[in-house]
Amino acid sequence: MPTDEVLATLRMLQGLDLPAHGGRTLAYVYDSGLADADAVGLEALAMFAGSNGLDPTAFPSLLKMENDLVALAGGLLDAPDGFAGSVTSGGTESILLAVLAARKGSDHPSPSMVLPTSAHAAFLKAAAYLGVRAVLVDVDPVTLRADPAAMAAAVDDSTVLVVASAPSYAHGVIDPVPEIAALAAARGIRCHVDACIGGWVLPHLDTATPWTFAVEGVTSVSVDLHKYAYTPKGVSVLLHRTAALRSTHLFASANWPGYTMLNATMQSTRSGGPLAAAWAVTRRIGLDGYAELARRAREATLAIARAADGIPGLRVLVTPDSTLLALATDDSCDAFTVADEMLERGWYVQPQLSFGNLPPTLHLTLSAATAPAVDELVDDLSDAVAAARAAGPVRVDPGLAALLGGIDPAALDDAGFAGILGAAGLAGADGSLALPSRMAGVNALLDACPPALREALLLGVLDRLSRPTPG
Image 1: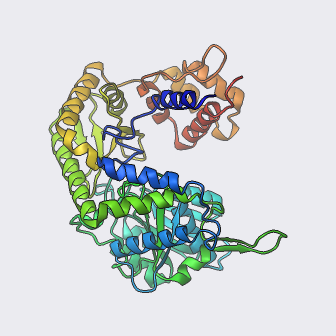
Image 2: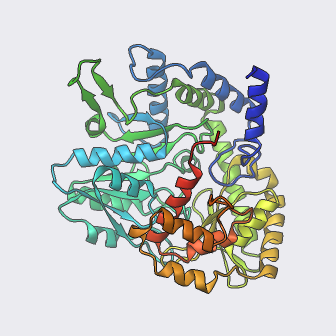
Image 3: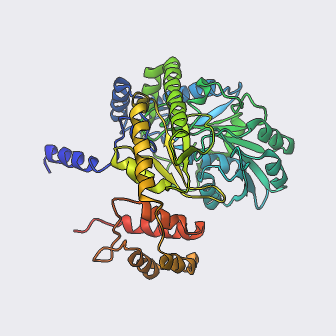
């Protein structure tokens, strides 16, 4: 294909996506609104795209930039003298490495970790991948923060790690880190603070709960730069209180005839592009710039929260501690229809399904670029809720609900999944997956399923979506 045709096709494909800039996609992407910061990040990304972080002696520039980023993050998060860190591909890799380090730092044959049910699902992924049993503890039903007493009761001789969030993704509240870190220290185990989404914004805000390395007992903290540092994806930093604590996730192997494999993270080959982009953007914006961006995002969050509580049918689930907001509806409408209505008005808000006694909610991640459009967002949110109230809550067909209730997720095969698609009206003429433009009905159907069945169904969806392009 000629170059201009390739680029035109890429632009066409990109037109299918949610917008990554403009502040109207309130999940997945983060926008500073600073065009020059974006530009320097993209130039650095391209400049170092072919560099390889596998061997720091071959590409010392990448080692220098990584050490600079770790130092910058350490200063922001009150890391003590002697701390160490690694740059990873994102929050999930940082969490996997934190769990791996705790697992390898113990000789228990069947290690476990204790975490609140609000902890990010990446910890459950780490449990599945690394063989560390996850012990889930209910959060406080009012504050939705972790319950330190209940977590302490769940700790036993197999526990190698306890977890806290700053803040939790789903609800935007900071766990009581001092109490959780203290219980970990008393038992001589590690305490990880997942600050992937809040670690670059919370240091610039007044928070009632301390959560950084300034808290004794915190042994590691993760923070994503591709979130509120506004760098291109994907870059996260995992910090450890000491280099010795980090050493248990380092890897080396000379037991083969090639080069000695030596890795600080789960990756071997690592493009230098994201690392260089993060270095460039953080230098361009600077800490004073980040403080201002954090202030704008926080003020936008609080303004939307105040307005949402005044919209009939809508309420703030819990007062936000940072720049994340969870909104719930009353019985007059449902969150899934509100999400569809917002999308029609040009806003993506993320539907979150019910969990335990918690209702379905709408998740909003507010970044600095959204701040100038708060009034427009509030007006559209009010109209979307009014439209959802007029339509009434979406209902799941009783027959389909009964069908789902009789399914064993472990026994669900491809033919059974195809039957469910057909019964739900989600099968194309050739048996392929045919998702509707409005997703409220699909989300309501998933919400009616037990978590294990929901997982099985969504894995089936992922499998159908991820197939080779015909022809």
